[in-house]
Length: 491
Image (cartoon, one colour):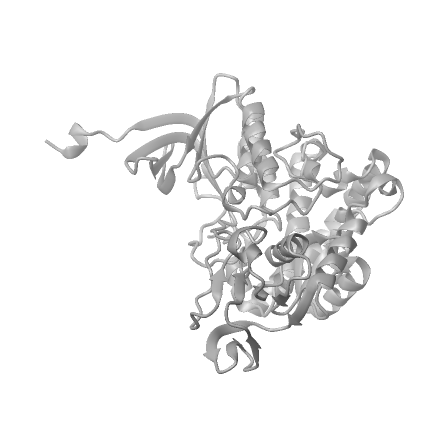
């Protein structure tokens, strides 16, 4: 007798299986619920103990960069009673994810399978068979008509940097809350390694919690953030001031031709950019306010534009050794906080965003169709349920591979904007304007209706013309870096 006959693998059936309960997965879940009836069923699978994706593992002092109403599933409203410009905390974001699942569950049956690891899937004539392991480590199978793999950026918690010296404390935000405990009680210098969002959050939290602390930043190439006060202006200014995000994205994509990232970066920094560091070669589509910039700059003791290679014991303390050969000596007992590469990974296998049979949608960075994968969860799921996922010739970029081949993230970021707008143009033609109206992720929703209508009319007039420019930009990027950048047909 076969062991499988004695202990059969539990099998669950559903109409749609969504793997991944982060922001991309919840947008896919929201859209799928709009096409199913009340008696149909969606199974939501995630390796975490609850919905939230990367927010479940995020460091405790993380906050949203954008105003909280602009971070949601579909158009589900938040329940917290805060000003529209409020930047939600980790716990508030996680509660909103749980709220979104509850709201969606009022439209369609949703079964939540948390603590389950996706292993593989097989596309069959009747749908898809999904193999997972359950919370108990035992195998389970799910059969579904459609599978949506919403892995997103597949973020993993940051580990501390490995250094040679035993006379420094090497930690990371995921394992050390810089506002409390030994690091807060210590008066030794802190070296924050990284220049992106995690580094800015860490610097801001440490400076606020421990005024006059010797806080230092090893910033790599430096990062350009978008100016929050101009992109989402507070108060009444949104009625007449600010730079509407979609128009900004269009302007950037129009200027970028696949080769001139330095020129575009200079323009961006001069008009709507902010940087904490004196040099900034890395564009990150996160938001920073002038108040945050001033507080971090005022609280930093030293800024090093470089990359840390090691920390080694020296005669006068511990020598921080940089990639260019320079060294800086810091006292024994200093802290090194790893804030590098939170979104960087190269271990995700390549997979086209749509399977040959069209029953599997994969939302991830190896065949990215949008600069923001949350938009992929929303718009690609609409295409899937209207049987247009393989019909519409969206462009896809292997953004992991492109990131590995460029010196900074700037070319990738600008390519992502061109990709985002190219594909939105195609989807606008394929699905119509009504689908766009329910997308709560749209940054232009910050502004009053009359300004949004003007911006939408501008997009409707120009998107087909811009689409050709964006297509050429993407193909130039693909040829320049030797990375797949084109339609999924033939994958």
